[in-house]
Amino acid sequence: MDWIPFAREKQHRYEEQHGELDERGIVRRGNAAYAAGLGLLMAGDVEAGEWFRRAAARWRESWDAGAAPDAWGRPIGALKASLLAHDEPRVEEYARWTLELGAATAPSPIGRYAGTLALLALGRSAEARHVAEGLRGRNDFPRDVADALAFISAHDVIGYVESMDSIVASFETRDGYLEDAPVADTALVLHELARRQGIDRPLRGSSVLP
Image (cartoon, rainbow, N blue to C red; front, side, top):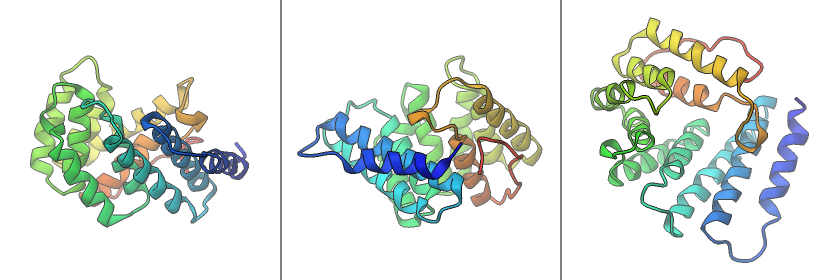
């Protein structure tokens, strides 16, 4: 994958918007910025952080533009992007916002996922473990992701490593990616959350990782 041209094409898509955007248009702009950030991250370009910050801001903006109450992809995206940007003030802001929306007690698994990410981002591991354990018993949510969240919350290093290997493998074998960016961004985000909990184990080498 030639990552710099990929990132430049996504940056161009982000910048080419004209006029006032509706909610879906703002989301698409956030998607383009996030893909640009992933491409730059894969290329080792320090500019990646700026594009992740733009993505997070657009996804947050889209919520206020009229998103449905269960559009949990927006706070998830904002959290993931701010974590990858290492933007600490925004990580805390988006995490608290996500919990204020009721994510941790949402009826849907994707809402609970958002809540678990937010709790881990704020260092509230005991609460995160409780929500993550609920995700592990569901058939409509990826088991390896739920496992990783639970293991991070419990500081179970061996379980964490095994579940992360599974997540990376799932990205290596899937057919489609957000904005056609073959990057295991879920693994990167969970790795960052694990690091914050004191689990500092490197991810295995892969074509879908930097």
